[in-house]
Amino acid sequence: MLMRTDPFRELDRLVERVRGTAAHPAGMPLDAWREGDGFFVELDLPGVDPESIDLDVERNVLTVKAERKPTYGENTETVITERPVGMFSRQLFLGETLDTQKIEASYEAGVLKLRGPVTEQAKPRKIAISGGGTARNWAADGGKPRLPGPGRVMPRGPDAVQDAHRPPVLS
Image (cartoon, rainbow, N blue to C red; front, top):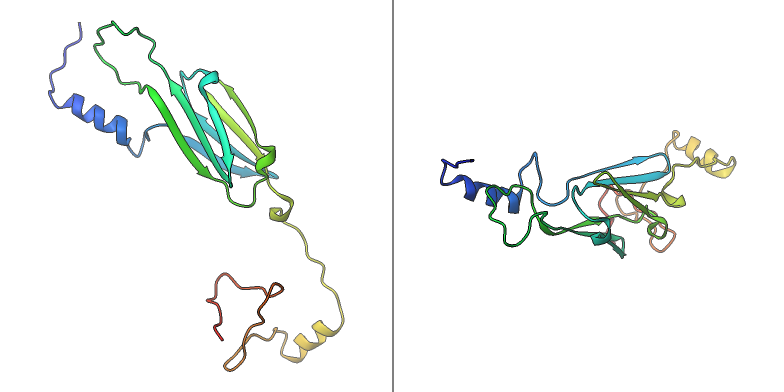
């Protein structure tokens, strides 16, 4: 028979189960990566019935819910219970670069695998450079485009482009 000698160990296990640790997060540990034109997410859900997994996407937020039920009965006296049971939930913020209408999911060997394609606007692309007036104007200024200086304001409106690394110019 197994014996426990540390009276605070059960409290430590409870705290770890609820809060998790850096090495073993509570709930659903995951890996996510982008490869080519796809974005991939794998969540560890060992011992979860595939019928209990629920996936919802709303406004680029993917919600994963799953339930792990205990394998022992209600009238069983447990000696050690370290595997978490109950409802688990995790939300992933997908951003605007994923096509949420085409996300695919599969579950095998305790791993939930999600794959979503990257939208056309987020794919890298080449921009053609045209010749003519713009190139001559830049060459006249020493090969650099003109940026707003004191007293000049950047263009506003739907066609204006704002550099993410510079604060907006206030007029």
